[in-house]
Image (cartoon, rainbow, N blue to C red; front, side, top):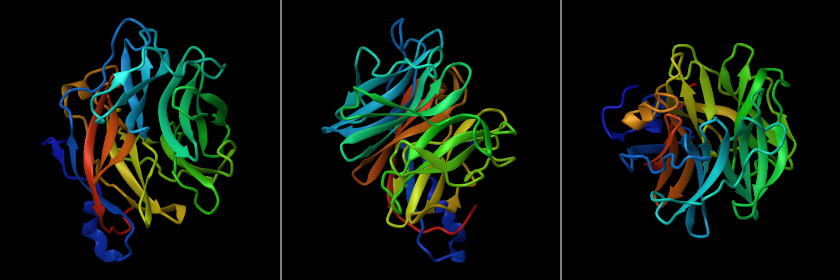
Length: 334
């Protein structure tokens, strides 16, 4: 979908067109999607570890500040995780050195990529991709301060499940336990080389098992997510639903943003899925970079009556948008 305006009216309100099919309130409306900056809020700098790209950020509130972990890439293609903080969620100050760099066999030569953050009790849990130029695998680390990290290892190994036959990535953990378990939407690559979303659960945040023997969000031929469906930030919880913002790519590798809504009591029960993207490349720096025509949402922070959404642009820059959140209803639209 080509975006004609800086302000995007998105998403869940479109489902109201079919709401007569079901009166059950299952979703929220997210409206007035709007970029907060016409230029990147974080860009590559220097000649070292963040000289080629700074992108795909996760952001949380901590000690009255917005804290961002972002993927930084040097000119050899090795990725580390950088740290930046802000008072207003737009203007960020960076630490001079990465807070997580490749050390283990499953990270060396490729790096640590694409952070996603969630907090339970006194710890932040980080899911990230460990890449050694042979395989990408979904990994985890934990921290009290977002700077010093303890690795917990590979949590979903590549090549080992019934439906995903290759890499694993992008773990978006539901921020509250449901039915005594932790739940995570993640990205796996099928035998048909399609990137799709699966569902896993854990009782301890360390040992994870597949909840289903098939993807919970499959790629859809002919749609904006025909080749790749990849979770974005930690899901947003409402009283009745779990809202997963995800990133979809078509057969031309153009990345746009969609959403799916699941039952709050049953993370495997899909209620609503967007038929059209809610966000797409518009600015030059979202269209031209290391990978063209990419917006990749990976961070979401509540701010008053709206959310701030943080995204990578063209695998080189960081941008931020906001959207208002209000109560709504939607019908089944898979």
